[in-house]
Every structure is written in C-alpha cells, then in structure tokens.
Length: 88
Image (cartoon, rainbow, N blue to C red):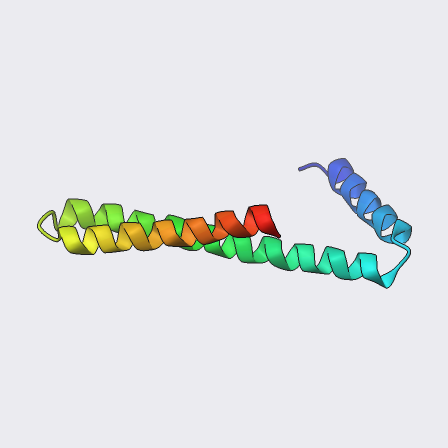
C-alpha cells in the first residue's frame, strides 16, 4: 500500500467516527468488530485443523479414524463460523 492510500483510509475512518452520533452506534460497531474477530479466529482454526487432517492422511494412511475426526471437527468449526456470519 502506498502512503496516499493509507492516508485516505485513515481519513475515511476519522470521518466515519465523526459521523456516528450516538453511543448506540459505537456499541454496534464495537460488537461487529468483535464478531469479525471471532469469525477470523474460527476460520483460522478451520484451516489449521483441515491442514493437519490432510497431513495425517498422507503420513499415516492407516489412521483413518484420526483423519476423519480431524476433518469432521474442522467442518464443525466452519459450520459454527457460517452460522455466526449469517445470523449475527
């Protein structure tokens, strides 16, 4: 990113903050930021879990139960993230 782009982003953020009139709006933005952070953490956990499952599949092909457990566990994490994204 160039300095001009960064300055533009900062100016837009400052203007948006200035335009928010009530504390309710600030709380809403804060909650939205928290939800986004939780979603990012869940997404990261899903990717790491599935990567470990694939590694287990190729390193220990006889360990199918471990592979499926890691894979399905990762999918449950992804489903939780999906539900959070569309309900909150």
